[in-house]
Length: 65
Image (cartoon, rainbow, N blue to C red; front, side, top):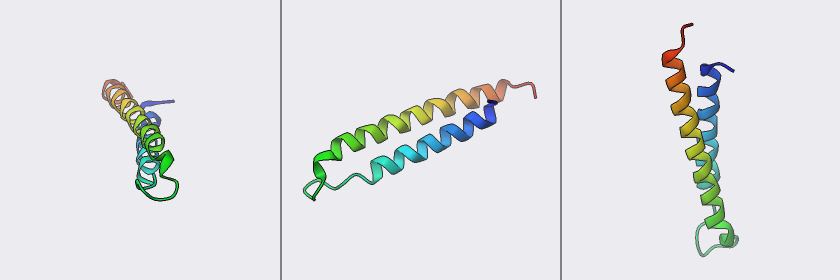
């Protein structure tokens, strides 16, 4: 995979993490027992997406095309 594909993968992972964390139940509502775990997983996915983006942007800037 080239840097452009890694940039797209990092962006998709970031969006997926935001979606996971953003759809967690609100405290005090049915299903709120999983709120903390869902937000934690979403946050980890976002950070992984950022790491992929940082690495891919670095690789893209150094690519010789």
